[in-house]
Length: 306
Image 1 (spheres, rainbow, N blue to C red):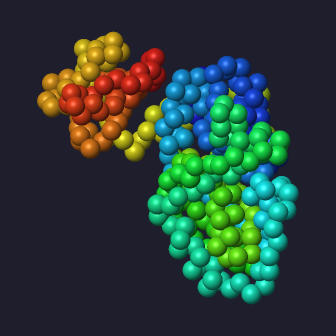
Image 2 (spheres, helix red, strand yellow):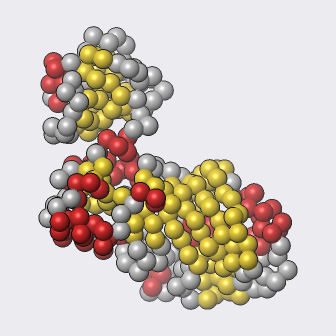
């Protein structure tokens, strides 16, 4: 049982709860999610099974898209609707034009400070545990990228944004910071993840649907092959001798193609990783570029996967 499920996480449960449900339904011990969603948030949660757990890092690194409802006039300690109110402000005079103007500061590469109520660790302890104990520590801001940020609705005091962003982006922090820019405070009222890398909400499966699929034996219909999440990389097909070399951990030279059986596209040196397949179509794994040695180094090699 190897692959990835595109699950529509419901409201009110943690991402770890979803993993536990999938582990129970599937009987597969190796199960992990790619990209935590807060309990109140809904939407796309990729869950990896078996050898699929070895590509979690690539899913976590992928861009993500969200629809966020933000309530003006109230700021909370958690930056969302579940937190304790720490600020109120007058939003009555705020116009759509003011919001559009404020959003310009949050597009592109920006510095963002994570909220105290987050899983980031400080001296080995998650920040949210310190926050619950009434302890606040200084958090280092970090560089994130907002690829797209659009105001799609404004009905005072609720504005709705669609956000496409890099890994490490906290939409709660975006909501809070926007409220500070507007001078009235704000909190994240509702959040839906629309996309995580390859996986889109329109193709996601609900937990009741998944439970039926496992009960009646058609769960395979919902499992994506492991290499699905790597489809944006170039691929090479190698001959039998080279396949064995790769399985033994031997690197391939960057220049020359004597080890290739077919190469619809030889990966260029600017690409950091590529996919590699055997002659019979099995996904062998991921090769990473070693620029200094001018070779492709096997990084993740999988057991036979058709």
